[in-house]
Length: 165
Image 1 (tube, rainbow, N blue to C red):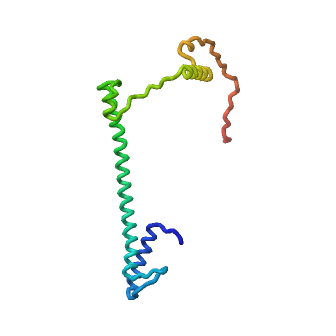
Image 2 (cartoon, rainbow, N blue to C red):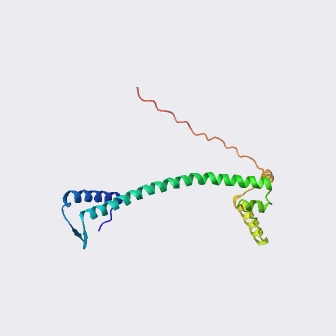
Image 3 (cartoon, one colour):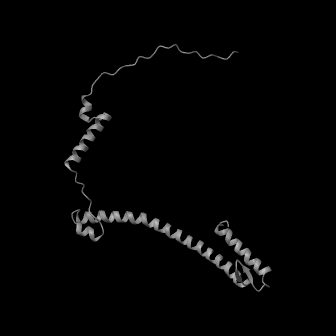
């Protein structure tokens, strides 16, 4: 059996309801795959799928709208929370951990490097400066030299050819 999308299956169910009303309304029982149906129960079965599919579409649209509202509020709330944290820090100081905890904020974590990490970091920085030939302002002043003047080359100018008259 092939898989149909919701809209196609809804249309088939609507057509089936119309067909049962038109052509099978006089039949007392219809046996399908070993199950007996009356025309009324068969139409009710098709209609239940149509109603469920319509409800799914409506629920998805409502969900998408709710997600859109949440996303818009999320950006607003993140900005307001950052501003509130800055306000609380300015008002009570960065050392007022208890007051910040009342608002659900945690203080900034201070990263403490070991002596080995500091040494490795300094070596990396020195190696990067050497590889990129980075100099400070005092080192740049020590660099002196003469500028090379380029003499223009004496190539003969090309004459433009005029079209024949």
